[in-house]
Amino acid sequence: MSEDEYNYIDKIEREIDVFNSMQIEVGVLHDDFLQMIAVVNNDGAVIRAKNVPYLVIPLMKDGIRTYVKKKSVSIPARKFMERTVTRHEGRWQTLAVQQITKLMNGDGSAMMALHMIGHIAVEQMKSEIVRFKVPHNAPLTVANKGFDDPLIDTGALRDAIDYRIIPKLI
Image (cartoon, rainbow, N blue to C red):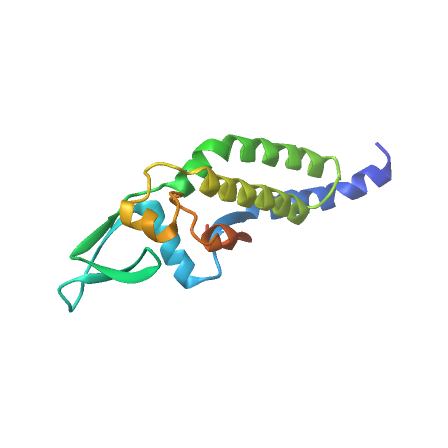
């Protein structure tokens, strides 16, 4: 090995250290309301009237706004986050190994590698939201939305999926 090749070892070690000291978070990161919507849809929830006897849910029927009274509504769990991890974790691990191999060859940087994996994970979670079909929406929800697509209404939840790279907690 020439002296030039040894000069890269410190840089390679630093990049691998950076890669191994960071983690990628994926989900709704920048909007508290949509974060709550994501958790409720992912985990499911029962919403009950508080301080009043009924929830009052607007409903458009034949072009006329009307209202439906309910004591509670049940939102079934639609585990799109877990499904994304289950379906794609192996691919993320393969990408990580490929990126570390590139780093060991002196190609790229740890942050470039982490950003690439983060972008891919975001697209996979967005795709999972679009693909999710069961459990179906309740008839009242279908009547309000005009279609049965459990995790899509305006697309705001899907569009809010993002990633960030943060230091691992030790």
